[in-house]
Image (cartoon, rainbow, N blue to C red; front, side, top):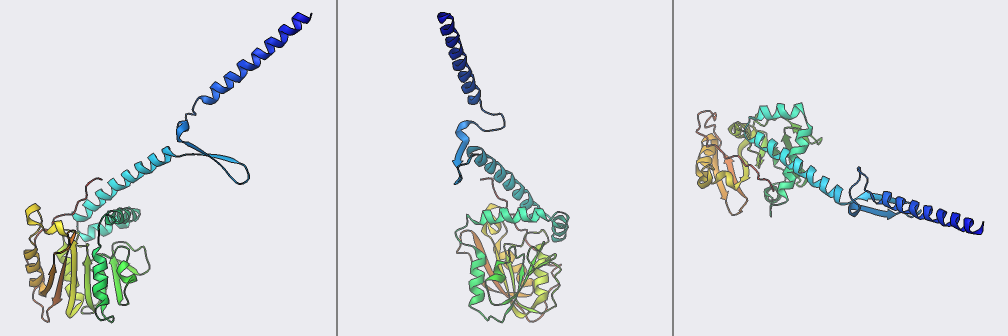
Length: 283
């Protein structure tokens, strides 16, 4: 009887050891809904509760989302350079979320620029009469209006800020000869960009300022861009005098014009050069 009792105890101990091994094996199998163990971070809160989160997996998903967002931005960017202002307005009115996607991608691209042209325009305005009334065509996040004392009318295709007026830039609600400075900062994007400049001339007072900043590659004839001298000639034919041409920055150019007193042209008979679209490469 004693031998039989010892045998029963041995069998029970063997079953417990096998059961423990099975549990260890089961626990070692990664859950199909989770990343592998090396991607799981276990943390303990102040009340002793443990939580698990995926580290490598979330990083991978963030990268995938960024890649998809970047591709969407490049598609929208190309569309804006190859359609009219009216078409762009209708496009974003149909789905205003696309405007957010575009400007998020735009801001990401601007992070790679050592200097932003809008900051130079802000500096220029601060050095001139603070009573100047400004029209900012294609204002984006309205940074210009938020950094100067001037009265600024901010225009863009979609209004995400109470200070921004949504409109086609070739047809603003401003009165004729009502502003002192018209600004186009990286915003001559539509194929009908000449109509934007014609609108700027309409709303500018005589001897008012026209400030244009554009990506430098758009004015590089050796690489398919427009001849900057031809562009300046066309703007002058519209009724402006060239005051300053600044090509010192490697990323963008700055052109300063003053409106003539008399009307010269309606803009339709001017031979406007085609500006090269600014298309971003995948990073």
